[in-house]
Length: 353
Figure 1 (cartoon, rainbow, N blue to C red):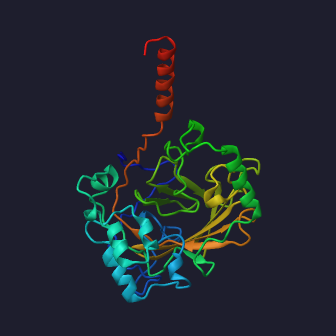
Figure 2: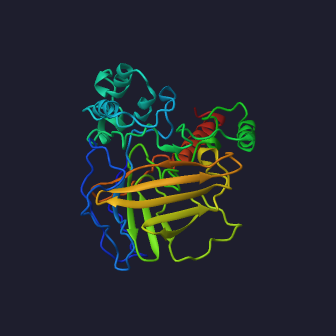
Figure 3: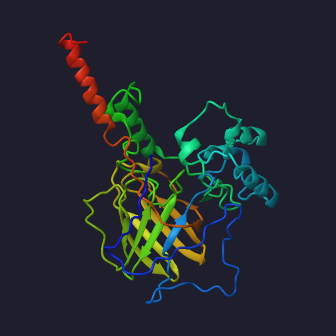
């Protein structure tokens, strides 16, 4: 399904890639490095070296579950119990929604694949993800959203609601499978939003390779066929305001030892989290150890939310190499399905069928 071969971005960079030790899911990453002897790895020009293979895999949800209320962090005991439950052998690596289940027994029932009927076999869980290290929680935070303090994305405003209403009007009473025009780009392996900006945590294929030169940085996300993000660091201006793209247009700069990437110029088709072409994303990457990067982002769009909101996703080092995603199932299927059915219609009209 997702066959992968080693991919190297060699157009913009010359250097040595760091392959860092694998991340153990049983450990909670620290927010800062407590080793007084640790020194920031740097390029020859003094910039922090962010290169390597990093994973954002986690069961921590983007938004805090309702039953946790204003609890921003799990206690040590709660965190340990959840880690044990989430990383047990047989845990479904795709069942990220289980964090929203308050009852521990019900959560375990949904999470544990061994409780299912023996005749249940799904390619995703039973075969190609069966050997993956089970995901745990990336920290004691109860949500990736850190601001607002309630750990939830702000409600959409009237302008965003009007756009949503217009889409529903256009769709009418048609079902999601009533026409090929209604199928999403992700199903056709054309575009996924997990690549960013902002960088996110996909359910699987969650490796991000970072490569770096003094004037460019490349973020190559494993999932889907999106091209790598190539981010200039040399102060060049943004593209024309009239040019709009799915991933927007990114520019980066260093704020001390933190890489800041600011992205605008989105089109109005991706509509990530209901956003519009006015979306602006600010991402911040700070290396805090040999095996971790503190990553946070802030989202602004006055035509979608009346306030900005922020989230953080710990990035932990993982082993390479990274292989090609090669998503292809839906790339040609819609055309094939339509061609076959047109052929059936012709045969019926000619009395062949």
